[in-house]
Image (cartoon, rainbow, N blue to C red; front, side, top):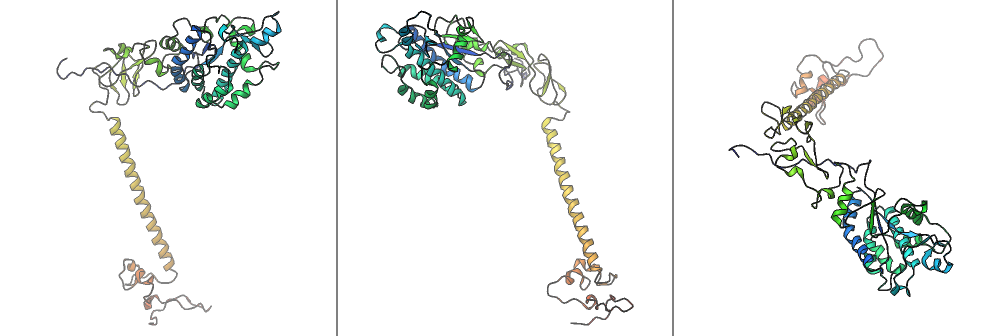
Length: 422
């Protein structure tokens, strides 16, 4: 690098603060089972909830997207003995466990316990969402998978779930009221909407092909790929419009920051600013605030000084009034104008007061030009205003009160020229 030459620093300007794209925000559904006794499959689902909850909660807090928990269920098939439907299903066979309980737990638990717990978790998510904290469901679900298991005999227990719900900030009473009587001949909306999302309630389609758990669907389509956090986040981030991605999509090695390259991704840059804006899919060339152009060439509109190139000036050039100087001049002008207004107001007020005083005195004294006239305003002239308004000094003879009105001809208000001395 030549002496005195300043190399452009690879610094992108701050990304605009934009809400999630209203056109195609990713809408993820996480498909799992609350069952904890199905071996390796249940272990994978528990691990998935724990691994994803931090990123999912962060996206939901930022209001970029909202995960919805889903559970695979089925209807009791026609011709199934009523006792079998009662053991595997709730709400009169409308919602049944997808798979039977593992043999070693059959003596303690039934399929209906699994579906009831699924309903509890859906109710917990509904209560968390109504309370403005949908991400709280992840805390409850992950904790429940550890604390309320078939191994410890607490699976599906409302008593086991209650403290976990409280810790997550969800009201247990609201949740249990939602769970209600699972033997009732009814089709509760919380399960009906889950079945609709799965697709079988509408005769197939949708996510009805979800067979392996855990599974994630994004905007109704199944995510295909590894279910580790990084891979899933890449799938979600691909659903956001450029410049509307959450910060999580630009961190953690999920993408390559092209703006960090020496050429700023091919965008305009100078020693202080860069038009390169990092996005999940690549980069956008967008002039920073205070500049205009197509991102490949930017002009400083604050000073109208061209700044088209890596060596261009990012701030006001010589001979131009910079933004700070302009603000300073305008501020000084405002102060001067305010002071002038104050002085003018005070001068006007003094002039009006003097005119009022003169008008009052005209009713009681002559305003001849003698030594006792208005020259006394300054305190001289043998009396004047200073003495006339004194609290204790007697008024000079020239300013004695006029005689009372007699109704006779002449000037009844003529002042006494010789006035009596007090």
